Image (cartoon, rainbow, N blue to C red; front, side):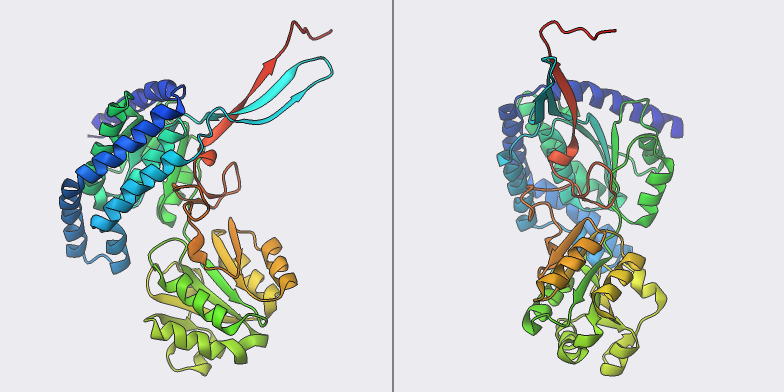
Length: 422
């Protein structure tokens, strides 16, 4: 069985490599035409997509998977339309391929240019979120890359229906459908094959999921990896924070959508601001339907707060649960985040610009905010159109992975007969 899967994956890699070579030279207008056609097919295929999604959702519910997971898996007409609109938004973005990043001339007359180029073939391994299928395929294509998609097993039917629309759009524009391919099996051997690099045909792996997936990818991958680790996001409320702003941002950061990686999982409150903020934040979160697990001071302040244990500080709940801790000022907040955070997204609420700058400089996360919700950790909100994920590593790409982050560069050197002297 594994030999059969390996052979199928190698064939996918070869097809993707061939498609990527042609796509790298495709003009922007052709890629934008493909994106428009993809959006058209998504809209036309809405009924088929929703039927496939219903199968996945019912299976997830029968497995008693948590509500936040089912919510991320679920599609409806509004979410399908958002998917199509997202493709059109990507079409409106500037094409990074061929952009000159820098240029200079040496005294010998040689002229140097650093120019953006596609990475090549990108393997994307992600959880059961159908919109990621469309976003990932479209972003890879617009940036000149072929994509091999391996979505979560719980969303396989939904992803198949979406990829069918994406490939139809590619072919309408005269591009190869092999620019976007999807792994059709749930067998984990397919992931292992992707991580091997498929005999040199895969140039980059992007995992988007929990610790176990990312850990396996980092341990086994023989090609470069953009890691999208869990979102252990924090909101720190400083003593100088506005009460109403702190309340509104904290509730939004946690409760707007609890199942996304930018949802806050821990709220930290300056001990010098406990009297000003603690009861207000507890009341607002409780009224919004959020369970609070707190340290000793929070538990003593309100019976609605359950005692937290050590595990709570490092748990990505992805649910209507938040941990709460009183800390010793901004330094205490940064120490807590350094110990328990995942270098994803963290926010400080304060009217003190100096304190805010200490936090912005000192917290080593991909995204650090001042007086704003962690739920802005999204490529669309950054103006990137869409994203494949939030890279929490430090090499090449960090934060939202959009079009520019899916390119590399090469040097073009122009001379007029120069030779290097002995």
